Image (cartoon, rainbow, N blue to C red; front, side, top):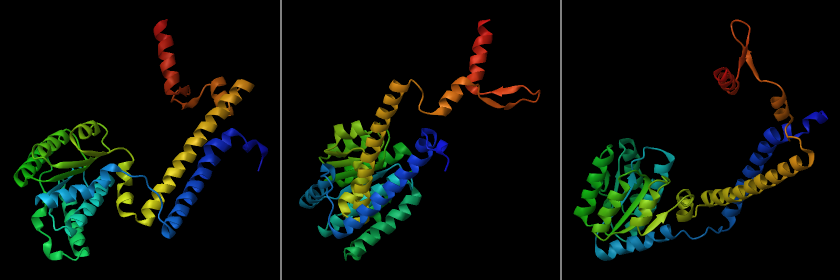
Length: 298
């Protein structure tokens, strides 16, 4: 291999990403193998440790639990919420309690209905499943919110869970549950709604905790190993970025030259974007803007 390729022009944009990808893949796979032999540590997530408290409260009061999957369709955010819902439902089955699962997507309803049936079968209580406990309310935002408020008020629920994609209806649902005295646990990656959940709910899942919820609840080796491996990968990526920043800064301070030779080439010669029909060079967008400003100032 020529020595000319052993420069920042080759190492940084081409070789470094491939090395990091290989390193991250090996790291995640190794953590999965370790998780199969021993239990890996995952820090405590207060909102998820409150699941047992919420189910126990509903059992003591003899009232059902509501679980809203939000307005999301069949996507990764809603599927994550459904996985949390199945854990809550399986815990409730052991205590003989009801969980009313609601959603705003008809396709998701079919998936959720089958998943809840399987949960009752796995817990040895298939006869306890009630079809009306899985409800498609409406695919319209505030129609869904109105119907959900009605369910919370009529059932006088003891606990309310809200996981998934939420918008302006989030505070409506949280306030409705507050009025009946329900304990509430909520989580969403929709950053605009997190402040409302924090203000109105007892426990709120924030940031990466939402995607780590399934691994935390199930302790399944593949999920926990992937989660720990991704955390190590993020730390390596952060250290690499900091070291790269320090190296490039020191290089420029000492040599007074750009690290990438391509950058110097771009600064010294205009970028040609082909030619027009009349044979004149076609300029790039920044060059066109600069040309317009020069012509306008004359």
